[in-house]
Length: 176
Image (cartoon, rainbow, N blue to C red):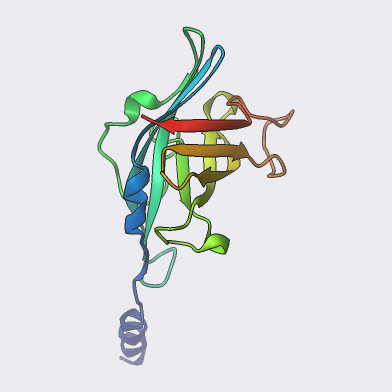
């Protein structure tokens, strides 16, 4: 009976946490980068992800800006999971790419976090061609929300040698 009482008490102490942000919706839709023969299409969407209480006491709801990308050189597709952008989303923990999304971004907390005036995001792009290597990135958005400047963070550890990424290391995506 004592063990049961402690167990019930412990379960009642769980408190679900929320790290949500309604301002991600302004970045949703298609973005495109074109430079010579290179074309990168990115489609972004907001997803509320639930992390279960097993991972965290009470669980956590967190909003992320997720996306899919296609990289072409001329007419040749170098890598893509763009065709999955309209698939139904599962809002529990990370869906392994390239079958689902390959981009996960959030506001950079050091520059204001979830704030409509914040213009910096950070996160990962998955390099589908390099064994789904996660590439850390920093994104800066212009005030009109028409351009998104992506910079690969080259000092993040990588599991595929030699280090590098398939996508251009720096690119400015234009909202379509």
